[in-house]
Length: 332
Ligand code: ACO
Image 1: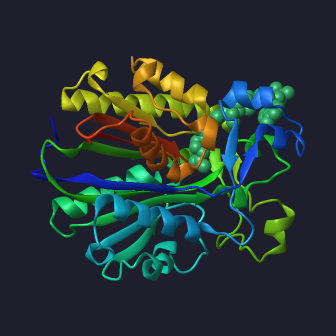
Image 2: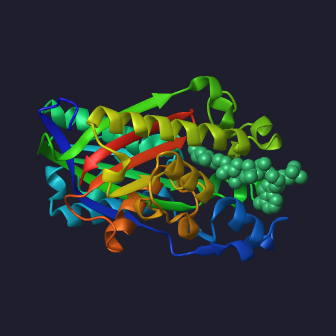
Image 3: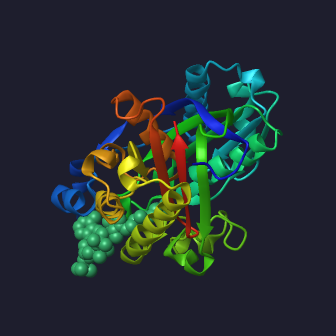
């Protein structure tokens, strides 16, 4: 069933951390021209978590990472690689993973951040799997974390209702073929880079430039409707392709966790893949779109709710800015 690797990576532990503050659709009704009815029917989202004043990405990263280490029963010193997947880092320099290293106690780990927007966690799983398969690393901590609400234009009803903050983490260790990651793959289409973007805050329009602020560049912009269509097609095609390569029928999946961006996307992908409602996990109503954090946060939720158990056949699929997408078939 696996893709020919003799050694692969298994998820030995999971953790997540969510900011305390909850913003409901009714709260948003007070600041933009929207309604709970519109947000619920178009996205499935009811509420989202938002970082408090003084909080930043680092706080979420450290708490989620520690929870995954505890869950795996692995000492922080044993971690040899830390990857933080994020589009909303603590600060531009240095990498959030480097800043988090001492607080996490992963003093022997090389640290880098990975930028693939909402696909960041699945991209990181693929990178981590390669390092484990070659024997270059034995304990890899992957953390997907976002503070999207810090880059949200709260006067733009097309985006501000969608995003939330949070972090999820996984500790990966070597496994024999047949366990852990069985198949994993990724795709990028940079011709559609402007579908989801934040043009300000980089080298062309630096955060300190008047032009960047005046033109509203330091905010996430999205061509929602066009993104929706590509997201459904891309996640469905890649996921079905992986199942085919593995010789697995959709009905054999115990759980399917797609990126939590929109309930209508989640349902459309599930339906096109021929999955039952029971097989498809969703918590988008609780947390909104948390980008790179969405899948590991959903895995923790699924375990806590008894919907994901050791030995289950699990499929993950993500989609986001880049455009990027990725899927993984895992014997959990
Ligand atoms: N409240 C009320 N009305 C609204 C709101 C709102 N919050 N937002 C938009 N509308 C209006 C629009 O103005 C439009 O009105 P008009 O017809 O008078 O112009 C109407 O509702 C329909 O707007 P659409 O954009 O066509 O609505 P759609 O059904 O496509 O839903 C949404 C929008 C929710 C954004 C959806 O397209 C979507 O989920 N897209 C994909 C998101 C995604 O998957 N992103 C990838 C990951 S994100 C990342 O990488 C960070």
